[in-house]
Length: 154
Figure 1: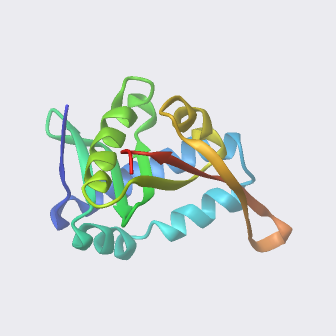
Figure 2: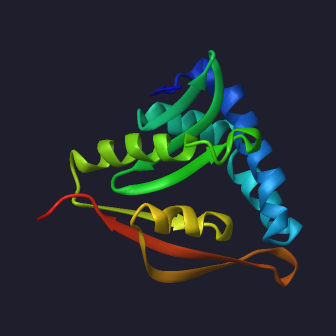
């Protein structure tokens, strides 16, 4: 497996990873409105913005995109791995690369963790700094953890 900077030609493959992971995993933890919200949020235009930032990468296996991650400043804005590739170290490899990129400019990484991802981030040393709630349609609430991790001593 190899993690590289994403290019615009990879937008469709990244879209597939995001939407496959969201549609497969999120309904086990959240109402359908939450999965729908995230799929709308992770549009092709949004993906192309992430690619343009230079801070979005992809994890490749045999030339295929199996995972993706992105950050903005010291905020990790997303880590997604195809469900068939989860629990095999892919997310950890993506996180290692994101944290290395953030550590060049910042002492601490922050992220908003979905319920299915909280334990993964806790195992990586992230601590809950707060809780967030985002109101969606039909009185549905998206609940998430605001987490942070010291990447280097100040």
